Amino acid sequence: MRRCSWVSLVVVLAAPSLVAAQTPPARAFDLQVDPTPFFLRGFAPELGVTVGRHRVLATVVQYDVPGFLREDPAVEERRDAIVGVGYQYFFLRHLDGLFAGVLVSATHTTFARPATQHEHTTWTWRATLRVGWMVTPFRSAPGFFVAPWIGANVAIDPERFAIDGVPVERRLFGVTGAIQIGHRFAF
Image 1 (cartoon, helix red, strand yellow):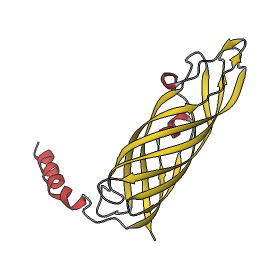
Image 2 (cartoon, helix red, strand yellow):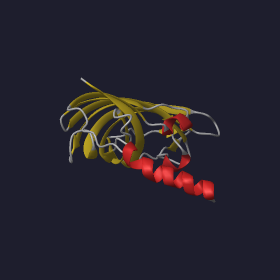
Image 3 (spheres, rainbow, N blue to C red):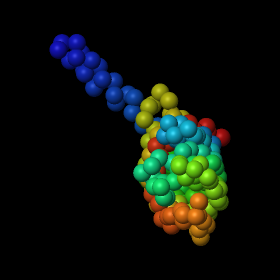
Image 4 (cartoon, rainbow, N blue to C red):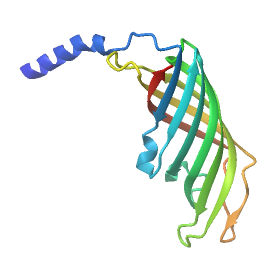
């Protein structure tokens, strides 16, 4: 019990010095990664350039879609490539706090029936609206940040097709999100 009290006291006293109070740079280049796709046999890097409260970004994502997120639960689904470009605006101040933006992407997906392993690949254009919060958690690492976000997307005229004579259900609307971890470099 006594050791736990000392540890708690050290954490309480040290925490204020770890919380970021610095002003981020007015212009920055950043590299972000969402760790979630790594658990789904994929990857999700994102590059961005920020000037003031404005950020432009580019991303490439790949992963196996888990069952509860598949467009059609009867087929397996793999996002072979999501290639996107987007824009974000920071409402509170540059590079920190509440942000919102839009991402336009082309998604290459492979759908497969588990029983026969017959598959179909297709490209779909999507527009995604993102809302999130960027935080710089440590004063000792002012370039490091965490940016969780959630988004709603709409598929633009998704292809209709069938595998083994059975139509595959396509969703027009979807929900997405990420907990991006990154580092910014001032320029």
